[in-house]
Length: 181
Image (cartoon, rainbow, N blue to C red; front, top):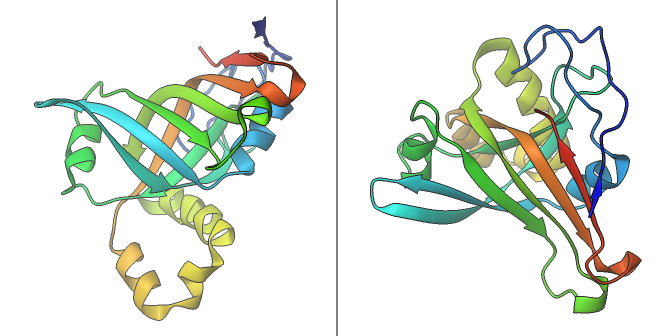
């Protein structure tokens, strides 16, 4: 497996969900393209009853407000009253997730595996994340009813700290990894 580190950015700025300082290695473009090519992720988490998983629609953006070297940010909507919403607001909660298109042949299977942390967005961060979300899903903005319902729901940012691209189209078991730690 190829460990991808990319270029370091010594002048990172704080942005939505980001901290000042170096944002770490750049996420490889192949991983960014694979994330942008899909819209549904299976989000795995642990709650008081053990491991669980759910599917959510997501939109991709760049964490850290677009700073070079920043990792991707995934935005999704879910209420804090859902089972996964309650688990995600727990301090220190971590998630795992996968992203892939249904119906792929094994020889061309492409998908992403990842781990990271989620947090609910508020204020200006929510407004910026919401813009990314409705640009990816224009049907949300086109429906007054749906838009109003989702605007009242929590918008989350998932910040991956590890991603693995699987791309059998480049050879069986081909992998590229990124770690933002």
